[in-house]
Image (cartoon, rainbow, N blue to C red):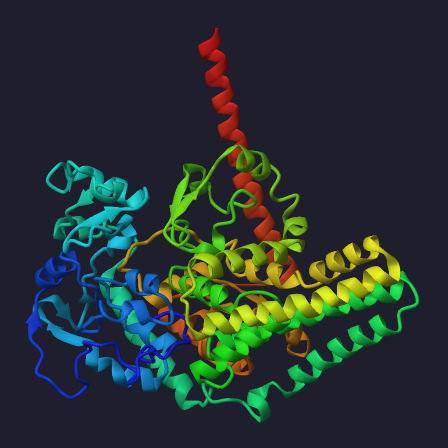
Length: 553
C-alpha cells in the first residue's frame, strides 16, 4: 500500500500474483460484520478495508513493494484513501482478487463509514515466532498498549511455561482492538473529508495533473542542471592548481548530489515515468550508483513516514535520538515499530538534547554520513535478497570505486588533509536537502489522534509547505510543496504548484488548515520547537536534582 510507488500486485511470481491469491473474476462475496472481522484479525488474518470491501493481504504482505509494515498499520482500518493515493489505476483495478468479503451494512454507513479497529502493530503486537495461529508477541512497550493491554488482565496475556522463543504469548481479543476515544475526532466529519478527498483527487486527474509534463517527463531543464554541475566539478578537479579549485570541485559535487536527491525522491514515488519498475531502477541508479546510498532503504523508510507521519513511535523520519527530539514524548524511551528497538532516552541523549537547537544545522550538515550507516545496515539485515538487492550492491561497489579513485587522486595532488577536506566539503554541500526535508514536519503536530482520523486530516495536520517564488523552486526540488505531495505522492513534481492552488481551495471548503510559511519563518519555528523541548528537559532535570537533594538531606 505504501510508497505511492509500487504496483501492489507486481510480485516475483511468474504470473505476477502470489500463490493462493484469489481469482480476479467476479465473485459473490460473503458479508462480514465488524465482530467477524475483529475475530479473524485476532486469529492472525491481515484484513484491510477498502471502503466496504474487505481485503485479505496475509499472503501478499511478504511481496508488498512498500513493505509488510505498511500493510500492518492498516489492519482493521479503512485504507481507501491511502490505497488510492499510493497506487496506479492498473494496480487498483487488480485489487479485487484479494477481496474476501463485504462489510455488513450496519457496520459501514453512508454517514460515518467504518468504525476502525486498532491495528495490532499499534499495540506493539506482531505474530508470535512460535507460528501458532492466534498467538501474538508483544515486541515492545507501546504507549497505547499500556492503556489497553495492561488493563485486560490475565485472560488477555498469559505466560507460557516454556516461554517459547523467549516471548510471552498474547491472546488478542476484539475488546483490545477497540480504539481509545479521541474527543476532537468526529467519525462523521472525517468520513465526509475522506469522500471530499476522493473528489479532489478526481478533480486533479481530470485537470491532467497526473500526466507526465512535457519532454523527459518535465525533467529536461533539471537534467541540464545536473550535467552542468557534474561537468563543472569535473573541470575544476582536472584543472585544479590549488586548494581553492579543488574545494570548488568538492562543493559542486555536493550540490550535484543535493539536486539528484530530488530526482531520486521523485523516482521513489513513481513520479517520473509512472511505471514502478523503471522508476525504481532510476532511483537506484541515482541513489546507489552515483550517491552511494541505498534506494531500497530510503523507499522502505519513506513509505512508512508517509503513512504514519510524525507519529513518535511509528514514523522513523522523526526518530533521531540522541541528536534531536521534537516532542517530550521521546523522554519516555519509546519503542520504534520501524527500527524494532527502543529509541533510548539515555545519558548521551540527555546531554545532546539540552542544546539541540544550537547544533541543529551543524548536525544536519553531517547527516549524509548517518545515511551511509542506515543504508548499509538495512542492506545487511533487512533487504530482500532479490535482483534489486544485487543491483544495489553493484551500485555501491561502483560508487566507492569511482569516489575512492577520486579521493586517491586528490590525496596524490594535495595530501591526506586535502582529501579529507574534499570529503567534508562535498558532503556538507549536499546537506541543505536535509534541512529542507525536516522543515516540512519538525514544527508540526506529533499527536496520535487514533485510527478514526482521515488520511487527509492527518497529512494536513502533520505537514507544512515552504513559500518560495516559482523562479527559484528548483532549489527546493519540489520538497517545498510537501502538503500536496503528501496528499498525492504520485503527482509529478512539475505539476505540484498548480495542484497546490486547488488543494488550498479544498482546505477552505472543508475547514482544514493548509500550513505554509516562508523559509526563514519555517526554520525559526523548527528551532523554537527544538528549544521548547530542550527547555522542558531542563525543567525535568531541575526537578530531579531537587528530589535527589531532598532525599539526601
